[in-house]
Amino acid sequence: MIGEFVTLVVGFITSILSMPLVMKFMKKKGIVGIDMHKKNKPAIPEMGGVAVIIGIAASVVVASILTSEKIRLLLSFLASTLIAGIVGAADDLKPLSARIKPFLTLFSGMPILMLCTYDPRGPIFPIIGRTRLTIVYPLLIIVALAVTSNAVNMLDPFNGTMSGSCTVITITLLISSLILGRNDGVLLSLCMLGPLLVLYLFNRYPAKVFSGDVGSLSIGAALGAISILGHLEMVAIIAFAPQIMNAFYGLSTIGRLYERREAARPVVLLNDGRLMATSDPKAPLTLARVILAHGPLYEYEVARIIVILSIISGILAIFTAYLIKVTV
Amino acid sequence: MIKRILDFVLILLFVWACMILGLWLINEIVVPLEIPWIKNHIVIAIIKLVMSSGLALLWLWLWREIIKRMFWHTLKAHKTLGKAEKQEER
Image (cartoon, helix red, strand yellow):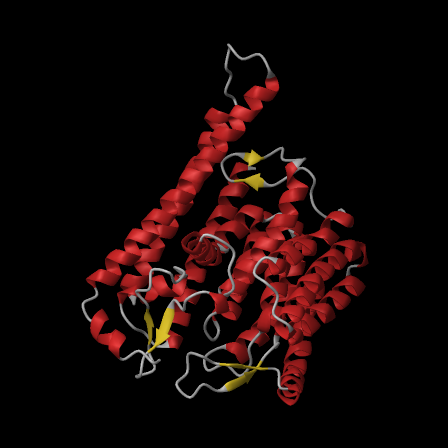
């Protein structure tokens, strides 16, 4: 257990030391994004997710030194994260089309298949127990990582929503791994938790850095990889409910894959600094828009509601983990 | 704020309960299904797959309809909407 704790601390320290350097570098190179939901429209350094990847890489290296028998598992986790991170970095530097980006993220599941670090017997469902999805399961792994990475990327509209909700998901996966006795899930969740906490500290309202697609896609893929490698598929589906809801509502209203920049804005900024849902029928029905249907709110209030929803779905996911334990 | 959260919690619970119920239906009814007048195993497997997919699609459709209706109903009920839209920044 001390080894796992060391990976958490290493990930946190590496990320907290590298984040200011990444921010300084991005600002110097002019890689900044405009914070659209602030009245003064400040320029914020982009690609803060690079510091998260550095933190994850450092904790994985330490974990592989401390638990050398898990080197294949850790390698597949890191490779999946890096592939999604590279796709995200490419998108941050030169925007990719709405179809190319999800297609490229399909490759992030390949290391898990190539290194055979998944359980070939398939997922375990609550009430049902173990399934026999031996043929379909490898295909589902590829799709799962693309879904998680893009769903996380789509729920990154406000300061601290992505980093906050993903921190909650990681803690949920950690607790579920402890309930189900999945040591791999515990180790990987702890590798992830430190860097995510650092991102949340810097990305929460008012944001000092944006994670960029490099951050959101890699974090989404890493969480997807933890679900597969830790054998926590059903728990992850429930924990990802706010992300799945957001992506599903958006896609079902637009009717195809879309980029935020090419769709009508679902939320507008009022003169008093609050955000309001538009009544434009062509705008995607995002989670933020549904939350704002009751009336305008400040950005930090919407972000807080999204994180609270993540906590509630996390509690439901932990209950699902308990149901799985009872079933098996 | 509690009303906004409560709406989603109810949807979340509904979706979760439907998922568990759907899994139970697939496990208890669809998977052990035997059709005496069809002898071909592949045809039976395809029928089971279609039934399971149908249940999954029904689940997704219900989920979407609830949210769509809830959103437009809430938006229309919000009387200050027209007033606030005039403040919108161009």
